[in-house]
Length: 191
Image (cartoon, helix red, strand yellow):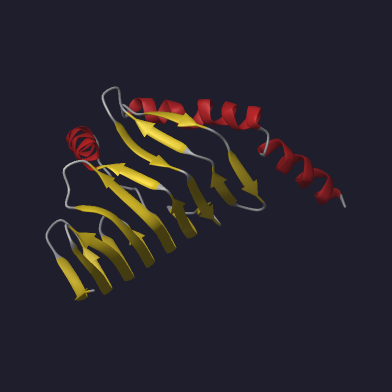
């Protein structure tokens, strides 16, 4: 009963737009500003104990919009020697490829990703649009067992897309990617 009296108000508080905006301004925006990013934050839905569904979200620099999303869902988010997610799902995700490339190249010159760790059991992006100079403009991505700890490993990946006028399905198993290597089993089918 005591736990219920504490948890219920905390959940209501975390789902309050005013509290969310205050938390975003206090903890997220300063870190974004440090790397030259700004955002348009429209709140989220918190689900006990550790899942968050972000409303439409936009990240941009002073020159370009980098990423927009209708919805981002982070299920069972935790931090213990790195970030862990049971699943990540995004709907209506659009990425401005040239702007993101330019932003990443500027960041690589001044920061290091050492010590950053991420683990996602299941990654689902049912509709991703790439903006800019690219022949691969829209695709679906499903990924299992994604790990980043200085190098990227993926247990399985399915990428369904269309390159120019050619629809295809790329599948991979036990993929490893680092600065000096890439490994795994890959399959490409033209549909």
